[in-house]
Image 1 (tube, one colour):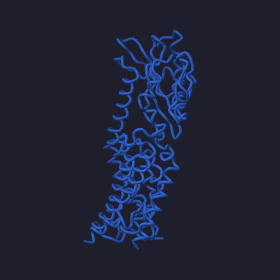
Image 2 (cartoon, chains in turn green, cyan):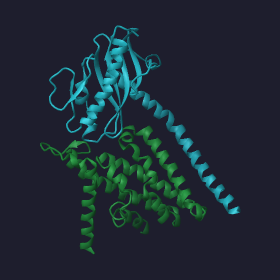
Image 3 (spheres, each protein chain N blue to C red):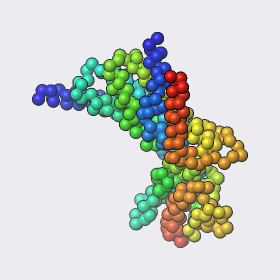
Image 4 (cartoon, rainbow over the protein chains, first blue to last red):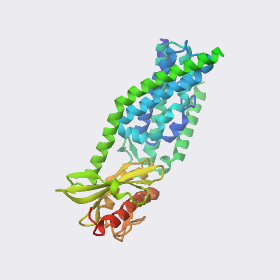
Length: 196
Length: 195
């Protein structure tokens, strides 16, 4: 029961992007198409689950005083592996995500989960935590992407959905990212206030 | 003191294990990545100069003298053993990063055969439209003799290229790259010099 809880908390209650407001940089930069959002979410989830497993397995061995450098080395290794695997097997996605795959290293959600969860919980809950947080972040990215792609390019996953109208180019450009994320955060805060 | 040694040894081990994992993945993906980059280039060659039966990288021969820094490669396309066209690999600075493209020229007509964008990081929905064929086709059969110019309206002169709507910077960058190749082509090949 509590394992399911570990998964669902990342999707709704502690959604990394909408509730913890972590990992904003990629959420603003790559959310120009739904495909990017899915790709970034998948790469991110893979790295998060792998680093949660490693850090949870080593949690009793890693000395307290050097834990942060150790985490960073572990996370960086997984990110570099993901980067190379994506380059080899999904070249189109690799090109469109560009610099943001290596930048998963400094995505604060991953270090945040290592510090807040994986280093004090056993492996299985840590995997669940990683999956939940990854799914939550992916969903959040896809939501932001959907607004920006539909409004800014008139397409969804590359398929035209707004025939006959000219798309608002602003939504695809950086300001559109801030506007979308801001509106979504405000809307979700309002929802939460009502239900509380 | 003993603590420091212990801690450094621990970090050393972590880094060592990470490096071992990385070198394993690198060995696994390295050849695949290289093959893919090569394959993309060969496919690109076929698109910009379809009538060739063999393409040779002759950059060492043609890029000896000072040249436009954007020119990366000069490939000569052969047909029936004789040089028939030239394919340039060019890099140009776009709106949000480098744009790499191939530009093909025909030796007999001294015209552009086609261009192909290989890599770009332009804004999706705007500058990224440069990768679509209806933009790349605007360069087809343009003469290599005159510098190409970007125009925002419907082109009236032969050497004009219509820009992508709201993406003049990207259109200019692509045109600048094609022009660099065009100048080199005119100077090295079209002036009667045969490879």
